[in-house]
Amino acid sequence: MKGRIRRRSSGHWELTADAGKDANGKRRRRSETFKGSKREADRRLREFVAEVEAGLEQERTSSRRRTWTVSEWLYKWLHEWVEIRRKLATFERYEGIARKHLVPVIGHIELANLSPLDINDALRRQVKNGEYTRTAELAYTVLSRALKYAWDLEQIDVNPMGRVAMPRAPRRRVDPPDVEQVQNLLRLAEDEDHYLFVFLNLDARTGMRRGEMMALRWENVNLEEGYLLVVESAVKSHREGVRLETPKTERGARRIDLDGRMVELLAGHKERQEAWVDKYPSGCIDKGLVFPGADGDWMKPQNMLRHLKELGTRVGIPDITFHKLRHFHATIALDQGNNPVVVSRRMGHSKVSTTIDLYGHVLPGWQKDVAENVANVIDGEED
Image (tube, rainbow, N blue to C red):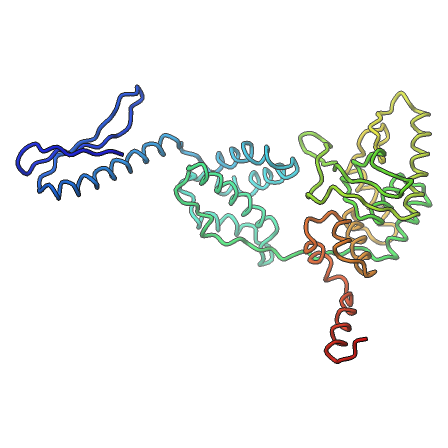
């Protein structure tokens, strides 16, 4: 910004600073009169120009802003940022956290006035049995990202999340069923020719996610070479029902090799499915799914879980879920001495550390060979 100085009389000076243009494009100026020496007037001119610049920046900032409440900003962020850049399941989870746990507590507060104390008060409502819950962690994440968006768009001068510690909920331990329980479950499903029999085998034998198996198409199954490709996942949406998305992680798109028994089960399943379609062609929707519903469309996730729990209750595992069968596969694979890197890739985890963190504690003794090998080196007994 330019500034000028003009002598008006002895010891009196007129200081002028450019102030940009008005709405009509006319140049604006700010002026003041100063009394003192020329050197003092020069120094004051520099200060005056800086003051005018600061004032203009404040004007620009104010013109870009409006008074938001926390509630208004949360929904703006959800629809402008999350809904566009994240998967639908993530959007719905974040929207639910905002609607149920943030808006009722701090939604009425003006965004610019939200304080660390307000945030802590909201998070402390999610304490159960003296410990933060997973909901508290998610609430922190949602609010933190929404406020960062406000900071990036210059809607707040200070981000209060910088003074709030993230609540830590105790990690839930993975508790998969044991081998005998899974064997009994699969045997019962086979004996009753249950429609989930092949689905449950694929879950236990590959560790695939339920949505990945629901979205599996025959075009991505190679029975001759014994493998399948995971390229999509079916996600249940409150707004849209079941829809397809790309896999959960970058490494979720993967090849999974199949054992011989699984290839046999899928081959028989395909033959029965083709015979069923030929018998009832008029009412069948052909999406090429390996596991379609009765009309060829998507299977209903809630019905699937209900039927699985009915089977589980009869073999002594009433809390069984499809995800616990996924956990079962990973723990058995690691317990059999398979490389954690290979198991991680097979599971579609984004990092090997995720696999170790999830399943390391349920595998007592799985590091025994490492311990013995290192001890042999230390004791001078290596081959």
